[in-house]
Image 1 (cartoon, rainbow, N blue to C red):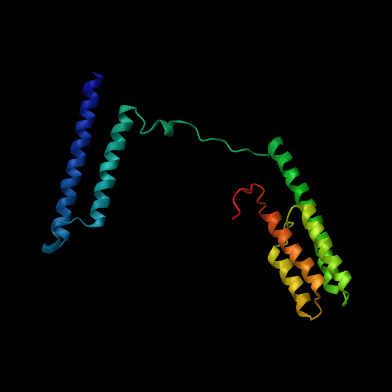
Image 2 (cartoon, rainbow, N blue to C red):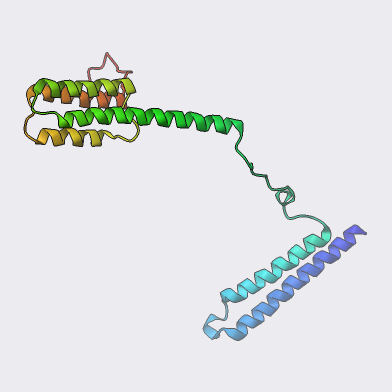
Length: 194
């Protein structure tokens, strides 16, 4: 009995789809001029698809089947408040950010000391050595200060005129230390000289 009802419903749906197609094709032929008689317009295609999909959905609903098992599953619920793991992770991020801000302030103070330094070769070289030590302790540049920013500040001081050889050596050592800390090539091939 179920089979005959299902068959009847499918035949009814197929008949309504074919009737919709015939109606749509007739409307198209009436609306379009002779040069476009073989092509359907987009509105008639939409009408056909709407009618066909409605007939198929109606048939599926009468048969008691769903279109997809995924549609039958409930949607996942989102959390209303953060989990303990998230809170712990958030606290670690805040601690890291605070530490980075302190390191940034320390490095910026050393750069300001270098910029404010008068024409004293030993003091300027020592400032650059201190900056290099800070970069080594940090393991690179702190968040918020880029290598380019540091280089601009040092070159601004260099452009003012007084820049002895000892200070240039300290500056080059600082630049090479930053490059090493940002990309430490510790796995060098000793056998290969290149």
